[in-house]
Image: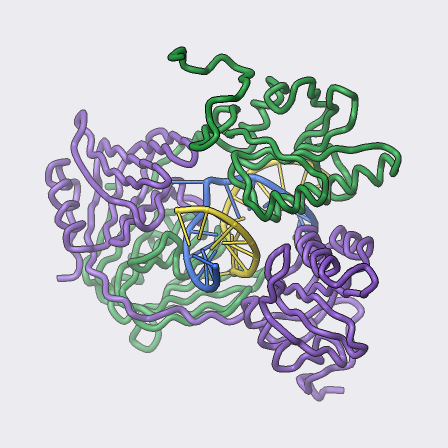
Length: 263
Length: 263
DNA sequence: ACATCGATTTCGGAC
DNA sequence: GTCCGAAGTCGATGT
């Protein structure tokens, strides 16, 4: 039996059900009318309403309303579940120390309470991350710029690790910062921070270039980059190729032969 | 009846159950062995395993394994739910355009399928945000520094909006950047970006101070602030007071009379 | 719709 | 444990 469900249980029955589910390491859902009280990194209160509460065997807890992808209240993995009956209500509690936190869900009525025995060994395989973009550039550095040579990834600097550090065709050092999606001002600041650090290392006489690589860039970020003498290269993280633009298309020299032969 | 549940339904029964739940605007959970396929901003695949799928009437969908606070796959509000039977499996699909995205969950077996009629009008009340910290400073600017005078919040600059813009006791412009928790290098960069922008506005002859306000700061961020001539002030977002430090405590002048009278 | 930025961000990796 | 940055981040606000 992989699912064990109670409908409209008494608080006492729900309590026993919950505690044995915690014991077995089941995943649990509780649906009913409740209030929520949180105190920890911040403090919150939530008045009465119908919500779905999910308790996982890794210690995480989620309180979901009928809206939003993000739970209205939660606690991350590593917390301790407990349950009890207080003042005629079922209290589901999650606690941890460091930081010291407590989440209480008080049910005035439980509509349904289910325990699921979970078996899951599969890992998610995801394509299109910043790491994928990096692999594209490392396997064919010319997609960044003709003559670019990567020398090091995750190279340490005073300001943190550089995504890619390399040299251009003239041997000038290049700091490359990668983003999987359209970039704004913060990415420009980040690149500047890294370029500043490398310039301090190399001394004021040596030129150091900074290149931001992303599928696209906002206007304000472009302004900031221009002001700092930094550069931008448009690349898609999934394909490693320049993204197709709706405007100004059709006149670019390609480094790969991916163009359709319709012209 | 606020909950409607099927145990080990046939795919066809689950399908009918799902479609009427979508119609009614219920919140839905499906538990069973499934695979997941996602294509959109990125691309992912997830092999077979037992998962809890939550579908909300606002169009969001969550696929939860037995671990992590974050769903292993999901779709944000505004998507369209649909269900069908394909190749002997129950397919639960979520789609949207702009961006063009598709999430498919294929159940080889459904253990339980529940529809919940949700009634929830309460809003979360939360204390301890950056906005709370700002209110503390605006209502008593001296907690930042004696003589500080706030002039404007969300003042626009070339680099974005400033949290607080004001003057110190000498009339020198001050850019204040607020963070509700311990800050690292990126907050220092952000403040620097804002101070640079204001200095460009005011001209090189005018002094402009930059103050980062947060409960604490990392060493690397301190280095960056020092290098840029920026300042740090320690304040807690919930209390608006200097946080209690384990070390070097006991010698600070308080602005509020919150100390215990045990000495 | 896009831009910008906060978040009880969460998460993973490195130290 | 802390630090640091990525994320299919999400979500809110303003334009």
